[in-house]
Image (cartoon, rainbow, N blue to C red):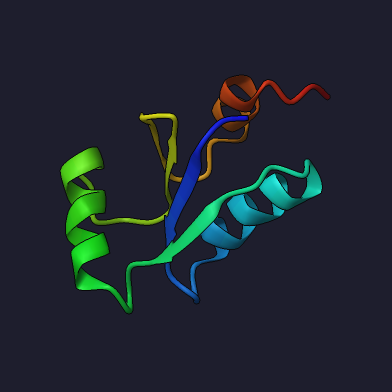
Length: 79
């Protein structure tokens, strides 16, 4: 099982879409609220070079934004 982290904020619609996709496919993930955790926001920026959310870390592979195809590809989700 892949180790998945989603750096997000509570008001971000694309963050919600990312987490919905993971939940619908029973993929466990750590949800990190960068609005409430400045250290996590710095970690997200260090990994992605971006301050925008969502940033998804799948076993060290970084996806910036909601990229359904790439998420499905890295997590081996069919359909």
